[in-house]
Image (cartoon, rainbow, N blue to C red; front, side, top):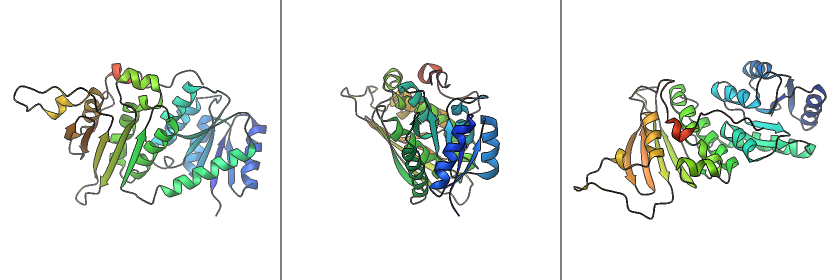
Length: 290
């Protein structure tokens, strides 16, 4: 059975062209002319990948992408944005909200097919190591950062509780990694490496998640109290402390440039009002450029 791709494009001629390109390459393609229709079609038919126009008549393509990623039935499908809005800000917003890649108009037909096939292969490879992985977050390489986070979210999809606890909080907390100026303003180190291990717990539906962060250590030694027993939470940099607080995670080890967190699900997940301080994360909404 051939892989399926949902083409979301409000210009009928362009949608038909993209569908024909994919069909000639052996891919089954269907189209939707609006964001709301795309969400309904994706839920009903669970495509293997989505080609998504950034500017749609009823909603932003970014909003469509966020809704697809928030739904367990459609979260696995890689999303490839198709847009004429070039620029760093556009790329940052697309990648931070779950894009696999971006194709800029006018596009080369062969590159469209190659990108779709690459996304399908990428999705297939995520099932090889289902319980561990490593993410390299670099503000100068937003595509690498975005795919790393998507790999984590794909691997925790078997646990709805873990997905609910992690997706929005971690995506928001690490969003500055998708733009150098944002990273500098937030204090989030770049590059930042996140190693993770998902440990199934046969006694509960909620697995244990260990998150090991590595970043360039500060040249200045960390401050210590006079008796040398400063709490790990107090010694943590603000960005790390806020991630731990929002996830209700414990800081197991804390060194200069190295920390380990554990999210075991014993504490209740944060309410919609909880989260990270606005001064650190901004408003969490995509910018208007793009």
